Structures are given as structure tokens and as C-alpha cells.
Amino acid sequence: MFLKKTPRKDRVYLSIVQGYWLDGKSKQRTIQKIGYVDELESEFSDPIAHFTQVVKEMNETQEPKKIDISTTEKLSDNSNFRKNLGYAVPKRVYGTLGLNNFFQKKQNQLKKVEYNLNHIFSLLVYNRIIEPSSKKKAYESRNQYFERANFSLTDVYRSLDYFSEYSNEIQRHLNEKVSKWIGRDSSLSYYDVTNYYFEIPYNDDDILDEEGNVINSGLRKKGYSKENRKTPIVQMGLLMDPVGLPIAYDIFPGNESEKTSLLPIIRRVKREYEIGRVVVVADRGLNTSDNIALMAGKNLNPKHNDGYIYGQSVSGGSNEFKKWVLNKEGYVATKETDVNGDEIRFIHKSRVIAKTVTLKGENGKRDKEIDTCQKQMAYYSEKYAKKQRKEREKMLEKAKDLINNPGKYNKATSRGATSYIKNISFSKDTGEIVDGLDLSLDLEKIKEDAKYDGYYAIVTSEIELPDKAIRDAYRGLWKIEDSFKVIKSELSARPVHHWLEEHINAHFLICFVALLISKIIELKLENKYSIAKIRETLRRYSCSHIDQNYYLFDYRDDILKEIEKVFCFDFTDKIMSTKEIKKILEYPK
Image 1 (cartoon, rainbow, N blue to C red):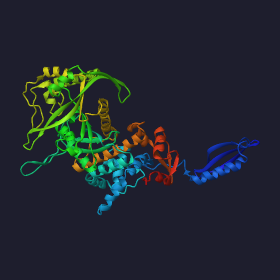
Image 2: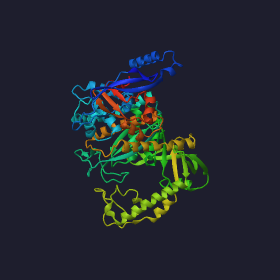
Image 3: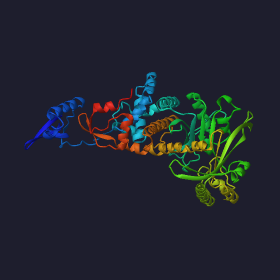
Image 4: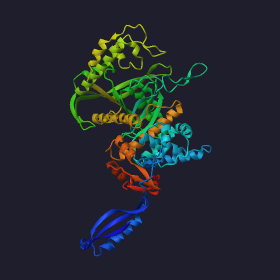
């Protein structure tokens, strides 16, 4: 750059100019317009000397970009000069979480593994965030990133076995890093289960011993699908902290009940993460005697007395509980603001009672009694009543269609409607509805359920907490539901295209890490922008190779500006050299 002095009649105009090459000819572009010398003399004693020094300092602090551009140059066949730099943001988080160091340590222990585990894992994570696709597609599009990719597609698939093997260790490692970097309150944890489908028509086979006992259950099994899919599914249990950052996950066969999934993950997390008391928040599907005893069983293990906040089905409660809920005495009118800022009106009441739950004893029978103390809170909302009536109408339509066309349904796809049908039965072998049954609507059941429209309940071991604090904690479940939506929609975790159990687990590990990184970015940006909007910005922050080691950038928005402040980036340059880009992509020290 240099100070250009342009004569204009009897005056001299100053500007800062940069030179470049076009079609082999020297050209100039104006970087900054300054003004006329005579006007500048009122501010500077010697404007030319002053701005000559300014240009000198600019040249010393900024590498000049001399680019030779030819307007006659043609694109060769199959040219692709576009590269993404938005992934620098998740890479910064990836490095801060120490995942590169984790894999380097593992790599040092694997003498015979020639491919780089960190290069592969990071590519799959960045691609899952920026441009979610299959492992094969991620490999084929690897050149859109500036990272080294000195591995083959076969290496990608081979590495999945190692990722699966390290899964629990990686989750524990990430928990330690998140706790140190951001801070984590593990005393209140949210848990929920969702499922992911496979585009295959058959279940995985179980592995049996010589006596026919199952020693390893197949993972991909047909079961209850929340989207009413008829293909096999795998279920994922996700544990999350109060601010919405995932803590741990487990996967289990699609035909198993979600009710039994809480115990293994809680035991693993408490053991491996070395955390103290935990209060688990979950919906009513996890509210079982076993899970109550697990989280608040003083008689079972006084040293590890945790807590729970569960949703409670009113119609599924005891007769005494239902009578208490329906009794108008004790209800108080309340109005609050929900997470969207909307006012909600309801009536509620609560009580603390002694509760006895029964567990399986050594004889295998559910006859072991455990005494606990439980707070029960009941609510009624007219808005919720209307929602329940609408949902029941849908189920009744489904039930009527099932009665008229039983061949269209099986045990998995008829879920919800079967509670309103008399005499229904399913084949244990196929799950299909048994032929020749006299099916009819259960009118008494319909009438009974209608009595509880608008009522819902929460039960908890935290009897000393105020009702509102418990209510607020329970409402936090929307964050984990949002995480499932992000995994499925933004990170495109389904359908799953793997069949080996190790590869399926590696797939979910990659999605788990991508979710954690995405949530951290969202949190660091103070939740001003959704993950969908952040992902779109990162995807669009790309560049084109224009000459030698220079790239042209053509996108900038408010999210990038916020990212610059939070993560200390500078994305303002329109043209950057490879050297400058590599500096941006360095792992944090």
C-alpha cells in the first residue's frame, strides 16, 4: 500500500491505495479516501508526512496481498475451488475440549494404526455440524475443509470400532472439560429417551448360548416408534444438565422398555464421573417403582440417596391418588410465565405423603417393600384439557380404523389406540393382531379417561423444595426434547446407515459430540440464535480460491460478528492467505 497524491486543479487529494495484477497488468484499488491537503492542514501540521507514516505502519502490520487475476482464465472440468472456514468455530470448541489431545494419546498406544484417529473423528464431527451426511459423503467432501485428510474411506470405517471402544471414556473426558471450562451443575440432571429408525425390514438376531438363553440381544429391533414407523429402531437415552449441555448417553435395543434404561446410565455416570447426589428430572414414562427406589431409596443404600422429579399420570395412579386429584378442595389459582414469555393460568395443590414402592426380591417376585417420602403436586389447566381432548379424538379415530382394518396394524403401530379397544390381542411371534377377535370400543375406558382431562401431576423426593421450584425444574425437560430435535433435524442422525453394533454406537458418539459442541456455541452466544441459524451461518462462511495461496470471502452477518467477540476471531478480511487461514484454524493452546 502507498499514499497516493492526486492533483485536482490547484489542490492535492490524498488516498491510501493498494496495487494488484489483472491479466498481467498492474492495477490499483483504493483502500481509504482521506481528503484534500489544504483541508487536512487544520488538523495535521504536515498531512502528507502524517499519512505516509500511517501507511508505513499499515504495511508493517498487514501482509500485502498481491494477486494476479486473469479475466480470460477458464475453469477445468470438475473444478471445485470452494472451501468452508465456518468449521473454525466448532474446531475451536473441539480443541478447547481437548479432543485432539485425547486422540493423540490414544494414537500413541496404537502402534499398528497408520491413519490418524483425530483427523477422521474431527472431520466427521465438523461435517455433522456444517453439512450433515453419511460417513461416505463426509469423506468424499473432505476437500471442502482445510484439514489434512491423509486417510482412505476404508480407514474411516475401521476407525469407527475405536470410537465405539472409547465412547464412555470420551463422555467422561468431555464432562471433565465442560466442568472446568463452563462449569456444570450435575446435581440436577434431565433424562429422556428417543428412538432412531433404520431402513431395513428385519430385526437383528439375538445371540444364544447352547441352552437357548440370550447372551447378547440384537440392537436393531422393531418396537414402539414415536413416529409410528414399522422398521427396526434403536433407542437412545440422553442425560443433560440444567443449561442444556449433554452429559452422557446410552443406546439400547428398540424393543426394550425405556423404563429400564435409567438405572444403567445413572449408575455409570455416578461411578465414572465421581459425582455426588443427583436429582433426575424425567417424564412420566420413567416413573416406576424401580426408578423411584433407585433415585430415593434410603433403605437400599443410605450413602447414595439421590432424588427425582417425575411426571405422574393421573389416570394411571392409585384410586386414592385419583380421588385426591379430582377433589376441588385445596386448589389455588395461579398464573405464571412460560419459557416463551406467554402467560399461563392454572390451579394447583400439593401434599407430602409416605409412599411404599415394591421391588423384586431375591425370589424374583415383586414383594420387597421400600418406604419413601414423596411430595405430590396436582394441576388443572383448561388449555391442557382442550389439548387432551383433541389427542383422544385422534386416538379414537385410530382405534375405529384398527377395529375395521386390523391387518393394517401390529403391536408397535397400534400403540395408544389399543387402550380404547376391547378384546385385542397380539401374536407373541409376529406382533400382528390375532385373527378372529371380536374387537370393539371400550366406552367405559373412554368415559373414565375423560374425567382427567386437563389434570396433570408431578411427584418428587424433594419435599422441602417449594412447588414453584419443582415446577420450574420439571419444565426444563423441554431442553432435552429440543436436543433430540437438533440431533434428528439439524444433525441428521437418522436414518442410521450402519449395521454393526460398534459402528452404530460410533455414529451416536459422533452425533453426541456434535450436539455438545453446537450447544456450547449456542450457550456462548447467550442463546440469542438457534442452532439452525448458527449452522447456516457457519455453512455459508466459505471462500473461493482465486490465486496461488489466496482465498476470497463473500459472506458476513450478525452471527459472525458475535462469534468474533466471543471466540476472538477476525473474519472481516475479504481476502486471506493460506497462512492467515491456518492461523485461524490452530487449536487453542
